[in-house]
Length: 377
Image (cartoon, rainbow, N blue to C red; front, side, top):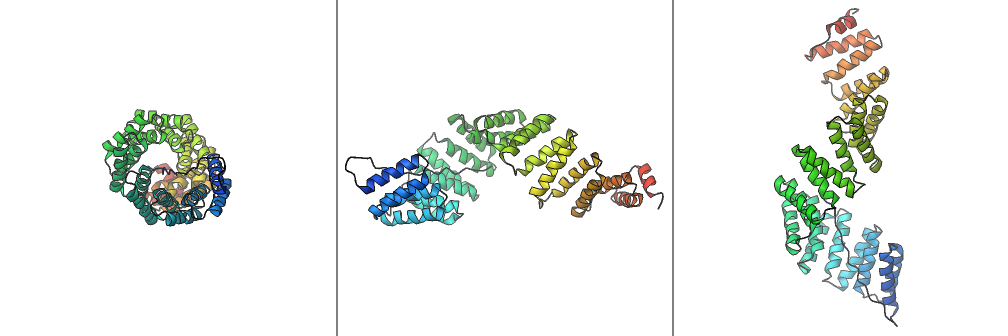
């Protein structure tokens, strides 16, 4: 399970008053543009404010926020650097610079900045949250738990902290405690989709499928773009044999995440079980395209071969069975199925060779097939 980052930026706003100077006007213009999502215009206004007063830390800080919103992380860091030079105890600047470092993968620098922000403000919830999320990402779960617990001690109704701590505890295999934290997050925020999903995932793992279904349904109720929850609902339907429902949910997952390999694979299985072999071939082909180096890709080739065989595409099926064998030359079913395909093509000598290989592996064969294939040799 993944922990989302919750980055909160503080923009310092100056109230507009009659006779104010260029600096104040541009700061307020920047604030207005930020609220409207016009980040380039905000950046221009903050730059004009800096021209008016090159020693105003809040102007550099605010321009850094605008640059972050535009994914200009390096430029934002430069502005936060300047804000900190001008105001060495600027906790918000340290926190936000840490967020930028995190976005660039500079994990050590990010943690250093979050640490400094907390040193300057020991009750800085945003910095604890960001540090906890980063520690979770780095699999420093015990330390992450400390950060989330600190947030809860400062603000007992912070549902995001309960969720983050639940993720940490899940990864420490403290499953009862993780379940409790996810449930608490939901109690505090009954529309918290990710918490429903994580709790549903735990129910699914424990075999409590009815409860997992309820939680996955709540997930998509509150977040209609949660492709993992649609995929999980598909898994439940596939398990119970509701193939059309499974296909529908996998299709929703794929529409939201067009490169979702697992959803293509499971939808392909559903099509295959539903005797929709042409659709199955298309999905298995997509899996092979997206994940050609997967450890178990040979089995996708095998499933595609079975569907091609069902469509009487014997040449295509044989090619896929041969690919399976090139990946795993101990997979007896691939030899057996290739032998049957070769029989259908009246290539008895090649079929006989495959049947004998299957025999060598100790698998019981249909003696009539073996006799027919090998009688001419």
